[in-house]
Structure formats: C-alpha cells, structure tokens
Amino acid sequence: MRLKEAADTGVTYMDRVLAVVRNKENKPKSLKKWIVYFYYRQRLRRQVHQAILQSLVQKGAMKVEESKDQLIPWKKYLDIDQAREFVVQKIGAELLEPGTVEKSTATLCLLLEKTNLLKSYYEEKQLKEKLKEIKEQEQESIIWVKEVCKAINEIEAAIMASFGGAVT
Image (cartoon, rainbow, N blue to C red):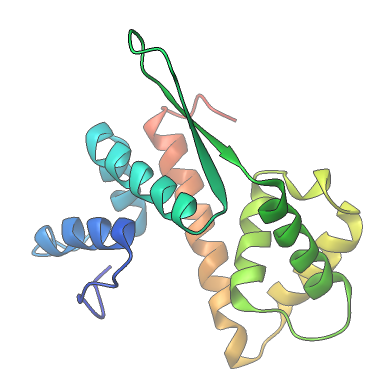
C-alpha cells in the first residue's frame, strides 16, 4: 500500500497517521500489516484516539466531563444523543428509502454490520438485504464497496492474527 497524496489534511488525527505512514513509506506495507503496526504501538494509538475524541468534542458530537477532585483527575467523554440520532436517521433514510446511498453512509453501515451493531437500531433483515444489493452492484462507481469490504476483512484478519486467533 502506498500513499497517493501525502499532503496534510488539516484533520489532526489523519495527519498524525499520515505522518507515520510517510516516515515508514520506504518499505510498503499491506493494510493488514499497518493495522498490526498500529496495534502494537499503544502510545501512538492513544495519541490518535485522543485526537479523534478532541475532534468530536470540537464538532459538538461529544462533551467532556472532568473530575472536580484534584487527587484523582479524570475525564469522561459522553456522546450527545442528538448526534447518534442524526446518524441513525441518516442511515434509515438512505438505506431504507428509495434513492442514492452516499459512500460514507454505506461504509459506516458495512462497519456496523461487521460489528453486529446495526440490529440494535433497525430491522436487520431489511438493512442486510440493502447492503447485499449495494455489494452486488457491478457499476464502476460502486467498486469502492468491494474495497471497503476487503479492508474490513483485512482488519478483522489482522486483529485475529494479533490475538493468535483466540478472539471470535
């Protein structure tokens, strides 16, 4: 896997990941190897995770609750129900009603399907049928679906390999 464009995006967490990939690009890695690389670098993962949380707080999708006790300081990140409700409605509107499905929505649904989270919000059978339709389309503009599915499978394989196949 090689970077097509190595310029910073202006998004803190993406730029952090791109910086790591740019610095290690002399030896190309598959997506699976990058996942394993980041998996074993806890400090780097924590930095990216914190940058993602800060981005969500800045966008108003999450809020931070901090301790008042100075002996044991802590931060708790809470999602805001309106953000979750917006995503749930968007998925329902795009997948369960006639019309086009945005790439970002379909990608999110594929990830949620893989983690079994779709069934907690919708009629699972209807959504799975729609996702199957999207996966089977042969249009050139839908090639990204196959790439997303391949990436999800590689992520799952990398996680399994990291745990020695012990996780199901």
